[in-house]
Image (tube, rainbow, N blue to C red; front, top):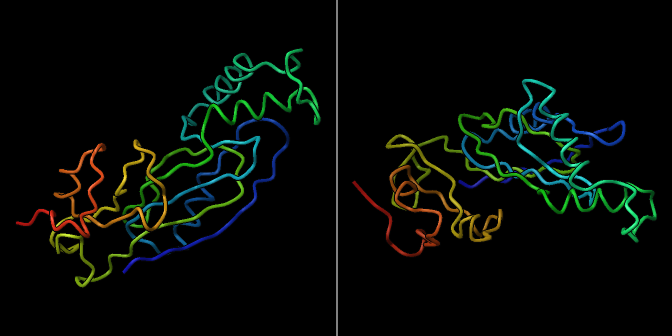
Length: 195
């Protein structure tokens, strides 16, 4: 059974900076009741991005902020797009240098990322609920046989999308044999490994 759960939330900010959102994403993962799967977190704002980053010591986040301020300084005379002030174009560039989405594994109903920071507006959870032995991987293995994984058919390293049509369920053995350069659709190829 393939389960899709979608939810949105808004983070209220107090200006430029990094914001911890891990607890909110984890709360939505729990609400989804997805046991094993993939959460895709996406921010649609053109001046914001997502990062999985150190948060045990707040100085790490401050260092990241300072680094981006030095990398793309505000108020430079060579920026012509300044409709919303001197930080307008630098904010767009900082976003373009980073990412607007993160894919995080969900295992045993838990988010497997310690610290997700950003300003964010929407969340989609793609996952599979492996609740009984009738749920199987492409090779026929069940969750009782061995761990089951959600796999990108076209790997993310080859610009594979986080969409349902690019996801397949593989057992741990099959997924371990499929590297990030392999775009085999095991569902249709009949190549899944069996015991």
